[in-house]
Length: 285
Image 1 (cartoon, one colour):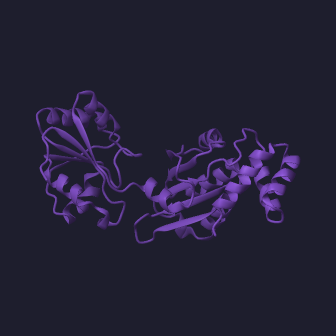
Image 2: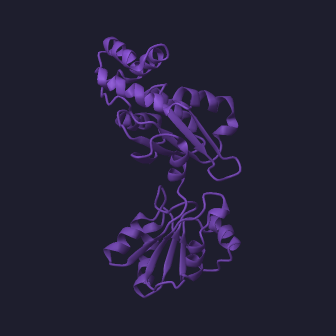
Image 3: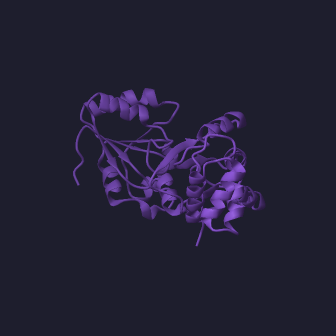
């Protein structure tokens, strides 16, 4: 393929499995004038594996504005540039926004070269509703700020997707169980496409116990997916209602369980009935 002059290519690279590298991505990286990489040392083995010898420059969160100016000048002169991150699709919780925004503002063509994305890969295999979802990236590192943000998301009905680091994964799931309720269905997707890939679903309380029982599961790169609020209630009774509905539907028909739960909690019967139906659909088997 021919590489167009003066174009900024946004190139997705593998999350881990090199077999996920697309032929088009290799052709673009081999044909551009310059590659802007989040970490040139990290990307060097990948480029070497595919025989890409294009010069590289580092573009990361600490130098993006400065380096972007130089890249924009080169693009304006007709050079072609490819942007890559350490893994997956650039700009998704990775540097590059300032460069792309500035390039488009200057009328420079920005061309995506699609490929792997950890959040989409995790969602596709999670078993959680995938028709509507919200990507939140990394939550705040401090407990207070993290819980405050989770409180804002407590009644969000869409599937919630987060990234998290290994040294915060347990604290993060603990906070989610506290804020969202211990019974909220969720999935941890760890080390996607790599040797120790793990996709584990359970209620948030169960995920906490699972992580504590095996510290090996606290290693690697994480995507956390949490079922959206199934009640649509803005009060503080959601966790209690979840437990009540779970108990009642184990022994009663859904319609009867919802009616009884409505009497106990004071919530609307229709909302509880819809919750019970969605809860049943979310359970394995």
